[in-house]
Amino acid sequence: MILVKLGGSVITDKGRYRTFDKANVERLAKEIARSKVPVMIVHGAGSFGHVLAKKYHLKDGFSDEKQLKGVSQVSLDVRDLDLRVLGALQSAGLNCVSIPPSACCLMDDGKLTSFDLEIVHHYLDLGIVPVTFGDVVLDMKKGFGICSGDQLMAWLADEFDPERIVFCTDVDGIFSSDPHLNDDASMIEEVDRSVLARLPRSERWADVTGSIYGKIESILDLAKGREAMVINGRVRGRLERALRGEAVKGSRVIGDG
Ligand code: ADP
Ligand code: IPE
Image (tube, rainbow, N blue to C red):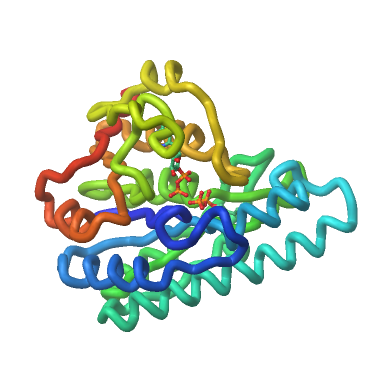
């Protein structure tokens, strides 16, 4: 089984609230279906999550009743996004079901601590593709919090020990600096913790889950003894080739252990 994350930068326009990239999601869905490999899918929230999560300070947990409207709206928006992704996957011929983290996950002080996977196992056994996503989740310490798709990837990788782990974003891989801001940024083919420590920090869009740095942290954690790749999900054919096990342009993340 291959664990795939479709990042928010690939399925939405992260700079504009609730902008779904239908064409790109439909193409990616067809690539996954054509590859014929068994997958489990996690998707990000993009502008369906980060914009309001930032406005209502949802990552910091409960401090004010006014935030509850934000919890409710973000929860609605990410579900809306999830339904659109599921629709594209199903039209491409993949039988899939949604696993909403708000209903089956718990966090503690911002860290995912519980995700009951018995149901996910049963869907996989039936030959159905489970699809989960970055969401607003109850937090035992803070009331609520934001669970990123990257945290879910780490949890699923530990439980299911996938053959390969593929993160799709809107750039070719991990670069020496933000490739959207620096033309001379160079792609780093192999990334380990020392590379992360040297990366200059910048943020183009609201991203409450740590943008690329949070992502690299999560990947380093999950990559122990496994292969994790960051590839460009906006380039036609790259995900399909990565799923088939062919060499594609991208960064390989090497975990600590
Ligand atoms: P996603 O939403 O797809 O999970 P992110 O938005 O978290 O992905 O991360 C991808 C974005 O990170 C890119 O659009 C890029 O502009 C930005 N970025 C910042 N620094 C880097 C870097 N050193 N290498 C790659 N991307 C970077
Ligand atoms: C964020 O999930 C979830 C919310 C903001 C509700 P991710 O962190 O996985 O989303 P992307 O991939 O960065 O958009």
